[in-house]
Length: 469
Image (cartoon, rainbow, N blue to C red):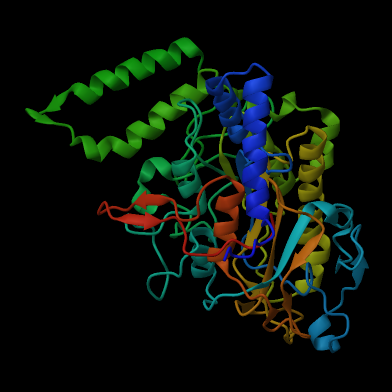
């Protein structure tokens, strides 16, 4: 007895359709089978409509000191006054999303923003919170962390390793100075990737002055007005000659002793002799209206320089968002133990609001927002309870960050905190998850292999990719 015939499945239909296509296309259309296979291979390799192009560069806007999430991106208008504070929420361009009233310009750009309100970790010290957020890993020990070659590399260093830059372009840049109150501390450096991946330091400048190149603290080491190209070349030849000399019959040092110096010297020489980076650093070349839009302060002008540097080919630029004057020293940080509301209202939030909104608008106008990922990070949040001097204390238990551009779907909030902003309520996440999402947006595998100082394979991050793309 013959078995009953079953109706054709979807797989059967697809197979039959492919067979009919081959028969009609090859037999009737006069197309050879090799030619057909070549066309199919080309179609397979072509980008599928709607697929996301990976971001080409990363701008990290870092809010050193710890931004109060309740007084910025996660307002709590229904909480008691000692928690909700003095500020009111305002609506944004995205229905249902509200942020602080002192971020009115960013409110207009909410369609570009993915706000993450459920971040947390467990360390309430500044430098250690910075280490966690910039490396994606918990600090290795208690106490302060002086930079060591065994540290986990900073995010900028990892991106520079996985996304190499041209020879005459820095692999990574920090603007406008190191963080942690002028004290070198782990979290911002190359760690076990080596000094060549430590982000160099530049500072916004105008006219003839060229922002200096320095791997650490200290004065600018190069200025374009000081030397012409011929004198620079002469000095380079002299230095090369001295490096070959011996002292009392012994080499002046082992090659490894000069590796860092040689790397930064060669890079500085390439930059000052006329590369695109030198042109990018001359902010007087920028349209006056664009200059003004970022604000005449260190934070805004650093964001403008970051945009210009990424256009010059620098794959990753980190900006310490400071409220200092352009020609002044270190700017105000986000550590608001006292006078929290006045400092946020008059200095810190306006700089972030103007500089970041100008950056997002500028990138959109130039058609590069999709190619440039912007990540706004901080050490931790601030305590829900306002203290006796109108301030908020360190609080890693819950805080907020933002991502924009680079394929990020804007107009969304990921995660939530409880009624007082004390803990994540839904979709809890941490620094490693933000790193994984950043790597994914850049077209890099979050599990990309890096080699540490002992040549051991290490995954770039152990976090999970958040559904923001």
